[in-house]
Every structure is written in C-alpha cells, then in structure tokens.
Amino acid sequence: MQPTWILIAGRTTRQGTSLNESKFGSEYLDETQTLYMNVEDLAQLGLQPGQLVRLRSVWGAAEVRVQPDKRGELPRGVVFLAYGDASSRLMGADTHGTGMPDSKGIEVVVEPLNIGSPPGAIHERSGAAT
Amino acid sequence: MSANDGFRVVENATCTFCGCVCDDMILKVQGDRIVEAKNACVLGKAWFLNHQIESRPVALIEGQPASLDEAVERAAQILVNARYPVVYGLSDTTCEAQRIAVAIADWIGGCVDTTTSVCHGPSGMAFQGVGEVTCSLGEVKNRADLVIFWGCNPAESHPRHMTRYSTMPRGLFVPRGRKDRTVVLVDVRRTKTAPAADIFLQIKPRRDFEALWALRALVKGVEVDPRIEEDTGVSLRQWRDLAERMKSCKFGVLFFGMGLSMTRGKHLNVEAALALARDLNQFTKFYIKPMRGHGNVTGADNVVAWQTGYPFGVNLARGYPRFNPGEYTTADLLARGEADAALIIASDPLANFSQPAREHLLRIPYIALDPKETPTTRHATVAFTTAVYGINVAGTVYRMDDVPIRLRPALPSPYPSDEEVLRRLERRIRQLLGIGTNLHPNPPRNSHVERAFS
Ligand code: SF4
Image 1 (cartoon, each protein chain N blue to C red):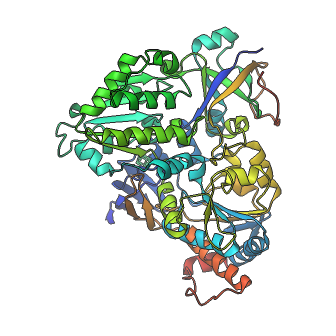
Image 2: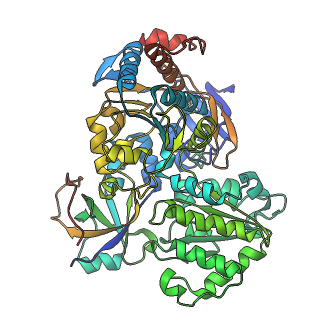
Image 3: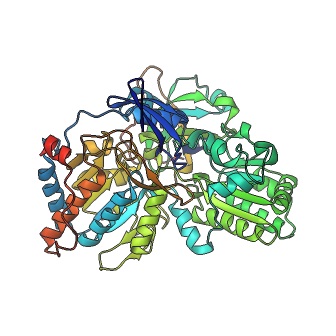
C-alpha cells in the first residue's frame, strides 16, 4: 500500500496575479502545476525540487512538478497545490448534498516520474489511491 | 476625475478583484491603459495594470466571429429550446447584471446558481441552520480587540483585509490599532498570514469540527478530554486559553475561509463556528463573517436571495423557486449529466469544476460572457466579450460584509457590459416565448457598441 498525502488546494498570490494576465500564460500554468511539499516528505520519496510527479486521488490524476514548501509552511503529510486544472482533476464530483465537491483535504498518492518531461494534466479519470 | 500632466486621475475608484472591494483606489489613466493604481495591493495592481482592451470580436458563434445580434439570437434559441438549462457564475459582475440573469432563469424555467455554491455555499446552508451574528468591517475596524482567522489566508487572498479593516487600522475604541488587538490564526498550514498573528494554532487537517465543538464546550465551562490534542494537534491548554480570550474580549470577530467550507464536514464545520460565535454572546460581543473571494460574490447571494428567497442553487422550473444544494447546484447538475444547456456569466467552470462536470459541459451547448478569453469561453457555443465591471462599467457590488458599494469606472470599453448583453438576451427570450415584451422598456442601446459591432 502506497503512503497517502493530504492535498490542500488553495489560492496563492502568484496564482492570483497571473490569472489577470492570462490563464493560458506560462506563469499561471507554472503556478497551478507546482506541488508544494514538506522537505522531509520530499526526502522520504527521494524527490528533487522541480521533479515531475503524478498525483492520484480516487477520482483522477494529474502531473505536476514538486517544490519544497515555502517557509516551512506545510506539516509532514500535507501537500499544497494552487487552484487550477490539475487540482480540479483530483476533485471528486460528489458534493455530499452541498453543491461543493471536496476540494481541500483530499487523499492523494505521489508517484515520481522521469525528470525532464513537461508537466501537464493527464487525461485519466479513475485510478485508485491505494 | 481630474486631469494631471497628460494623465487622467480617477479618485475613489473601486477594486473588484476580491471581496474586500477596496474603494480608495487612485488610478492614473493614460489612453486606454491604467498605468498606476495607488493604494492597490499586489492582486489589485495585477487587476488594474493588466487591463487592456482585448482585440477579440464582440461575439463568437462556434469559434467564428459574429455580430452582437446574431450571437444574442443564437444564445436565446439555445436557452428557450433547452429542457433543463442552468444559469451559472455571476460573482464577477454587477448586481444589475445579476438581476437580469435571475429573470432569464425564471423565463426559461431553469436553475440559477452562482459560484457561491463552490466556495461558501456550505456556509450559506449553515447560515440557514444557525444564523449569523454579523457586523460590518467598519465595526471591526473601530471596535475589534480580538480577531481570529480560521481556515483562511488573507495575506495571500485578501491582502488589504488586515491593513484596511481588521488588524492594523486605528479605530474609535482601539486607538492604538494593532497594539490594541490580539490576532489569532487557526490553520493547517503555516501560511503567510501566520507572521501577522500573535497566536498561531496549527491544527490537523479535517479536524476543524472537533476543534470548534471543543471550544464551544470550553466556553460553556464543560470539561474537555485532554486527548483533544491527539484529535486536533493543539493542546487542551491552548484551546482553553483561546476560549478564555474569546469570552473576555470586548469585541471579538472570527473570519473563516474555505478551510471550513471546502473540507469534509463542510456546512457542519461552518455551523460549529457559527454556533460558537452565537454562544459567545452570552459573555461578550462576538461576531463571525466568511471571507468572500470574488469581488461581487456577496452581491450574487444578495440578488439571488432577494429575487428568489434563496441565495444559490435555485430551481425555477415549476414557476416558483425551490432550493436544494446538491440537486440544483451546477457542479452536481453537470457532473450527473442533467443540464442540457448553460448560460455562464463571468466565471470559468472549465478551469475549476470536477472532471465529470467539465466533460458534460463540453457536451452541451452553452453561452459564456467574459471580458477575457478563458477555457470556458474557448469552448462555448456562443461567447460574448464584455466590458470589465469596476474598470469600464458602473454599477453596484457588495463588499464581503454585505455593504453595497457603487462602482466608479475609469475608462470606457468598446464592448457591451454583461448587463447590456443579458438585457438583450432576456428581451429576445421573452419574444420567443411570447411573454409580454411590454413588461420592460427597450434595452438602452449603447451607441458606441452599436457602431463598433452591429
Ligand atoms: S485587497 Fe482585494 S479589493 Fe483590495 S486592492 Fe487588494 S485585490 Fe483589490
């Protein structure tokens, strides 16, 4: 069984400023495809900053690059991704009768991919986080 | 507005990028660009300084340029022929445009829903269950001596909230500003807001309900098991200290973010927070407010509520409003494949909805209104380019504390406002449905828009 992390999706300043330029611009795409992780968690997985990983939830998957968290922001076991296409792919469609899918606190697995390939969401809907 | 060294200066302009709706902007305008935005935060500056007149057609039908009239016709046909249409978005446009969008949903017998349903929708449900002990940000500025941020990160998402309203300003009863206040942050992450707080309580993810319920018990003098630390990651001593501070402050306020509404438990998390604030009024004055994201998402709640009785997720198919989050909310209508057409105003569900919802939206005809090109406008059957509210368009927006603010636009746009497009659409829909077209006068024709695009 692979270890799971708790994903929190949220706003960042850079996501907010870059969406005013364009949602198709490199800065917005870069910010919304960067996963922040506690440095000890990075070391545990043997990941280098900038390395490509595949995130999987029970609902979907996305490819993003990892970076160490800023200012020790994240406790171990918690990862952060700015709102965008990648975070949406990991969300479930079920809103539990509220209209609001679970967008924060989603369990994900983090799978290292080869260094060098460009990030981009992969078009897959299922794939269990086991 | 005043002329100055070849620039025009627009004073007291309003930033509509976030729910703070700061109305003290001083904008320098040169030609059709805003070259300086004094008083704006980093997000506000990006909002104003990136504003440019897009070189896009006023409308596109299936990706091909079209006139405004052609696009209105096609959009009206889609909506009147749909069996279960949804009108969605609305949080980044004026109240005047929101009103017409609700009318359209009513005429076509569809659902009307706003982006509230995917941010503070659960909070809206909780308000109905518990109520909201509310106050304005002006009262916070002048009176609050205890300010708690829970599951929100104003330093990054509402950068002037603390300096303009909540922690820094000197107020009537807090004359020394920050020195007269205690600021507490409760969050899973040690965010950029943490250095601005006196006390930071780092709780475990998805344990907000347990923490808030324990605080309710402590406030009422009920014993709490010390194992609360295992549950929440914060010791009983720290929770007890916070409970005492809450009871003994003169004017406390709890601002909560989507850390509560988007996490498992959702409306129950918010109900716990609302109940805590309500309970505290047995001891002192204590208030609670959600941190609202988009510039006029609060207006959307108000307008939809005053027109239908409910704030979001409203079905008008039977000729009277029915409210049922989870059934009539857009994320669900799309993900379940129920909606067969959509009118999307000033929002981008193709960027932020779940994959099943996005896939269904791509399968159905829909209309999008937006000043910018977005994933949603790119795939729309009919896309309208509209003027930017607050920068090009006057109107009313509601600040996150439900205070309405009048917009003072800085420069004109060759594009029509959302309100104008929706007026035309609403009128054409009524004609097609044979509903009294004399109910409203002809929509005001915007002569420069006519010249440019008809
Ligand atoms: S805090 Fe919000 S409203 Fe105020 S200037 Fe910044 S982005 Fe604009």
